[in-house]
Amino acid sequence: MYWWLWVVCGIGLLAMELLMPGGFVALFFGLSGVAVGVLVVAGFLTVLWQQWLAFSVLAIVALALLRKPLQARLNLNNSSKAVDSMVGEQVVVVDPIPAGGSGRVDVRGSTWIARSKLEKPIGVGERCRIESADGLTLWVRQE
Image (tube, rainbow, N blue to C red):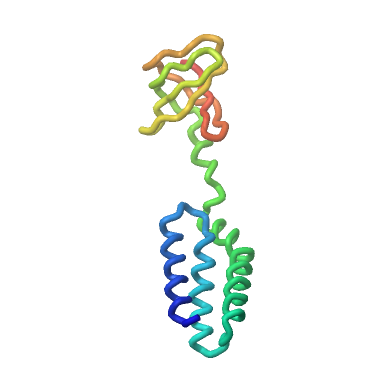
């Protein structure tokens, strides 16, 4: 395989990483594609099976060793802090919350699914406080 094909494929994978939300998977495959292209130009990898083996090994080793430290460095593992910080905030009901059911509330300019532990429904426009967050569902209490 020509060296420039490895570089082009590597750059394509790097560009794909920019379009994908925060996984850091294609990044390591793209970097190893570019690295294999450089190794082919330098004359270290002359046979096609060596190139594919080097690409696979480099990508998997880089993925296994560097992904978690990179995510930790960029603080991508603590995504729950933003939701947990909403506890205690006042929200406005935009879709009614029936007793034992779920509705929608407006929080910081966007709507979230909300549930209430109360036995009575909460109507549109009423103000509530966030008691807790369970994934993407907010538990609210009427004020």
